[in-house]
Amino acid sequence: METYTTDDALTLMGFGKFQALVLAYAGMGWVAEAMEVMLLSFLGPVVREEWNVSPQDESLLSSVVFAGMLIGACAWGFISDRYGRKTVLLLSTLLTSGLGLLSALSINYLCLLVLRFFVGIGVGSGHVFSSWFLEFVPAGNRGTWMVIFSFFWTIGTVLEASLAWAVLSALSWRWLLALSSLPCFLLLLFFRITPESPRYLCAQNRMTDARFVLERMAIANQAALPMGVLTYHQETKTECITHVSEDEHLIPVREKEHTDRNAISSKSGAVAVLHKLLSHNLLKSTLLLWFVYYASSFAYYGITLLTSQLSDVNRSCKSDLVFEVHQNNGNLYKDTFITSLAGLILSALLVDRFGRKATMSCLMFACCAFLGPLVLHQNELLTTTLLFGARACGTGATTTLCLYAPEVYPTYVRSTGVGIATAIGKIGGVICPLVAVGMLRSCHQMEAVLVFELVLFLAGVSCILFPVETKGREMD
Image 1 (cartoon, rainbow, N blue to C red):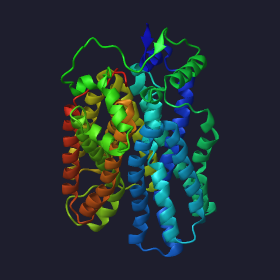
Image 2 (cartoon, rainbow, N blue to C red; image 1 turned 135 degrees about the vertical axis):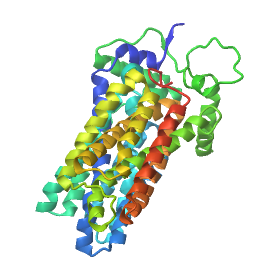
Image 3 (tube, rainbow, N blue to C red; image 1 turned 60 degrees about the horizontal axis):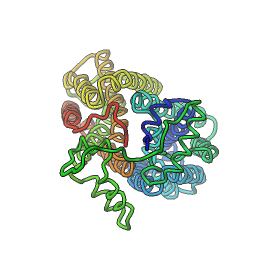
């Protein structure tokens, strides 16, 4: 009997109107996450002024949100693999929108901290939105569409900055919190028409439901499904497999995974998933992904801090080693937008042509090269140019990483694997300000730059060591 897989169907139908609607919904999820993260830049100072909060207590606001995001990234990933992508899309959106709006009514600073912590948990589901979108995209141009999807994050940061500029001058921070939750309410309005991932449905052996989603896609795209019966596992000629390398493990999926999924669906699901992620087949990819996520987040926030903090440091340090950067907030937001766009264009040009590993490693090393001259005194123009290049390369590398990670893992552990890696990345984002700001404030700029150089170099080497190239590969 003739059969076909989800990948066969997606390749035949191509990227059409159905995927465009999925892109719009998932993209709005990333806009919402970006707005909630960007909100922290404006909320702390105005709350400190209203409630006379100390600078130390003010920093708790960002800390509790990042702590929530760390917990949420892990929890939503497991829930997504266990109960479905749509379940997470709904629950996380309800949590973020409801408590985000409720936090606008906070009666004191402690109440605000508690509510924003739970908002952070909701926002931690961002990686599920990206994985859910990628599971609808044909393998051939998955890289390009992930880059386009990533642009929604940039849109969210620009929207939040514009909203803060308009609202804080005319109204109050409470209005800013309320209005920032609007994208989540838009997601709730359109939730009923969002489809479950056909890959997830196939992995759960719900073939009828998966075929129904693919039929909806065929109608929307004005295309036809392949002839035959939808299957999750392709036939293989291998009669006996005594050892499967990590390269072979990804595609096609072997019969062994039936046993794996049954184990993961058992009562000790969380332990079984972690055991699978650290199994022989996935151990190298998992450990390298954890480090690269950590390094990428550490470097990204570090470069941003270098750009925004150095002008203050120059006024307090009398060392001969100075960075002559003078930026106001308006220029910082404009430069963030431009560098994000430049990084996305870079990754779009490279990722489907040269592959994920080559793109990530080249951009990491390029970022390293841009930062290198900053260990010595440079003039203002050159310093600004070098930081611009470093941020663009860092953005491109992070975008490619967010594409690569979901492609590495099988469907039944994909969200959990990416969620844990994302959570480890958040740790890098938390530690970076402690290291970078501490060094800068103590007039050790050279040492701060060298730390970023080392982290980026090791991340580039790690990208080369990834055992699998996922360019053009099927996800199942």
